[in-house]
Image (cartoon, rainbow, N blue to C red):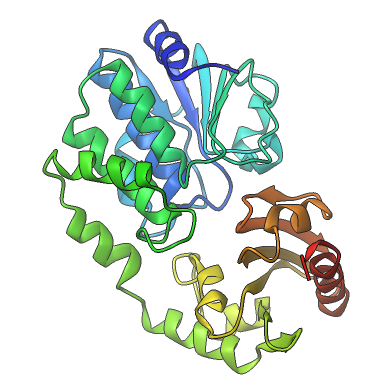
Length: 315
């Protein structure tokens, strides 16, 4: 496993770099990839991001300026905030086994790169990217803005329990570059479309509670998305809803991707290790935030998740 200094030295020696992001890209993977691309270009390297079809309206503006042109042939491939090759988008499948450097912060990280660097105690992969990029050269506003997106989105605008003193220190350093962090905060944390509000209302109407109200199970079936004409942008970060309910310390959000295929997002408190639960079903993540995919009817999916939570729960 590389140190920050070793990872920076490796990146400095490379050129013609392609950077990968994960399926259903969130602010952390997009922000990390864009910042790394900007940092490499700042030291005179050619670098691009592999286009990702899952971009939303909130993440697309930070990604688009760095998207690779058709036909770009990389000499080196780097992944940002990807715990396993199973999270590669369809157009990245050909890069399985070909990642030269994998940068991540998930405890479930599978070290699939030829070289790897991971920081499991970081709230966001952006914290690790900040240290690597700072070792490459000055953190410019062009680097700082997507890095702020990465750090702030993965810790819920510094409200989640994974936030540390280092998280705040990195954010403060990024703000000192003069970036427009207010727009980022408004876009990601204080703005919802009407359709998004309708999605949340429908999820809460159908919410089911278990274990004396400590567990909530929320569903987003395909029929709901279709009835509201909801887009990926409308459905972004729906997993944060359940944890806002008083008394809940274990929130399961099940979103149907295909008929009887459910993307599970699990958000937990100290009583339940989310990664241990999701690993039972081939997933992973962090102690308080993890995910997996279950291919089964909804009732069976619910049964498996409740069973997994009961198996892992501290009491």
